[in-house]
Length: 319
Image (cartoon, rainbow, N blue to C red; front, side, top):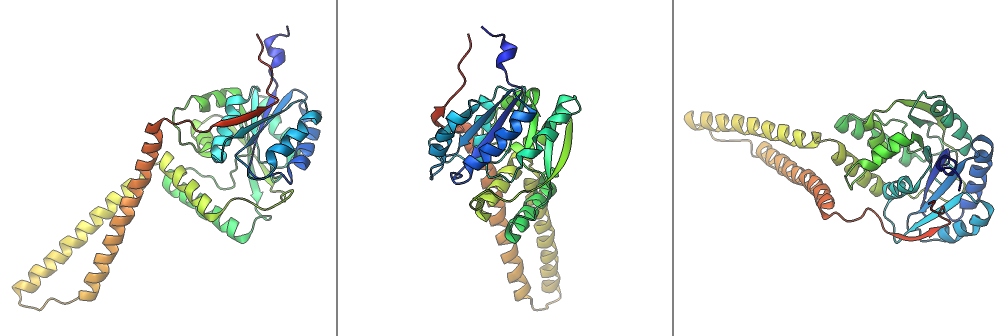
């Protein structure tokens, strides 16, 4: 029986995929060509996040070509964060790399990501986007707004950040030890504080198809990320309430003065604007509180983050 150290690959690659049937074979060919040269001891986990196309069938067709290829399919679409978590739970490598399956995270960058980890300079090697020239104008605006909100409300500077990053086994074990159900992987790795080295890369064009990220999905991600990492929105509501009390006090003084001086009360327009403003602010505040309550609700239900429908080519257990 081989020694335990011989059964553990140096690198595990986690590839979440959703409706990527058209480009998956070409991506895997690029990925394994790079891995064969830079890291002979490796495994690749493709996590099919409930794809509605032939992604799983294409993956299974590629298994005979790549002995180190493994697959996992969800029963339905649980989201990219669940896909990353599933990959982290199954990855056995001494280091773990997360990257997208659409080709925009170039496999050619893997040797550069491995180098700082191999020489002990970093426990996290984060690939940062040097430019977003391949993205549409709407995508760039959405990303700018998302990063701005995250920095303002959580203090996390995610400008240029991506999920394309390499983690030491210690970092992976730390992330897996976190008890929360609602996760934002990109922010969690920053929060851990492990030594990080950033490497810039140019976003490559998609191998095939179009992006599956919509404005609505990015909005949901922003709400999840912000409510997971900061209570600052609640403080903002508190300050807005104090501002409303000050405004109400000033209006009360004006009303008393008008009554004492027998001046007819005027300013119905301004009063209407104030009432509408703070009425809307109250609804916004209830919405923010609802977002936090939804997070608590998801946590206390204790449901699994994902359900596995099928595994393909998992490594054999060693006695």
